[in-house]
Length: 352
Image 1 (cartoon, one colour):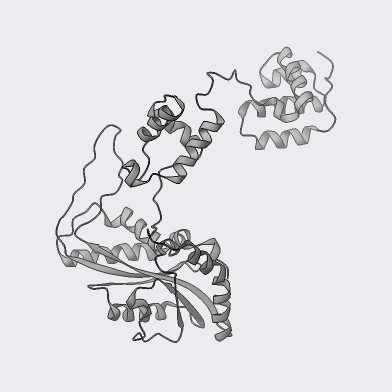
Image 2: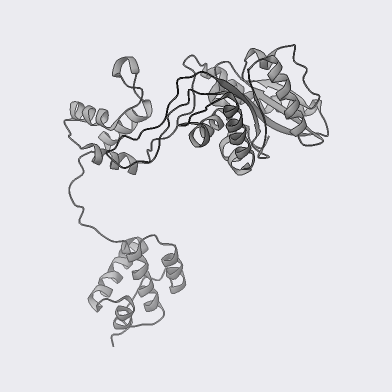
């Protein structure tokens, strides 16, 4: 049996075992546990038997640990083939993805892998397959995600001002209603009709999945409102979208607001949202969003979610079918308060 090995004195067996439990590298965990045994007085041979290796490997681990600490015990790889993309090239690819294409110039509304491969070849002379480039950009944290709606004539300065002044606006409403809890509600409308959208669906690679489509024009409207902080919602399915429908929706929201609370209802500036003809319930204050700012309203994401899960890729035979399925979809959402919170909470409008 060999004598105990000398290890650096800024660690001990307990610290190494804690690091081994937290490590995401199996090899590092095995080496840390072997060295922890040496801290406890085990010989080189005993540590080798524990780790399932030989005495020379234990000696190498000790040298690496003494030189670089626990990080020195992470697996060392040969490096393999030299990366085709330099850090500068990779930064340029990431910037190009984030900026997106200009449809009038590039002819597409989002970059495809073939577009990015062609750009890399033309700009840097680097040729990559679409599969390899897809692996690289996924490793950098990029995914195909559903985009939030953005109006092409939006005023970003007005949106920044709205966010900055939002806490003061809520404080002023709270001052006008002392003793009442303030609930933040968001409302919008969505048209659900026989011309449904075709969304992504699972299919085998290399195939072209099919989905039913309809060209008829019967439709209904979901008037929906959510309170993300409470995980509650209030909605109606109506045949038209007008001032009368908004009045009915206000009554529904008013009944859903918690007793003793006051709702701040945030809506866009559609005519039926801001009309002076509306009879606004006493427990609701309407706060309009800046013009052309759908991305500030989380109900837009609710509509995307509902269409992707319940409302797209299907046939509505009659108007009654539309109403029944729209009601079913909304009720499904209401039964998932955690989903309302996930879709609706915004950091700039949370916890006021």
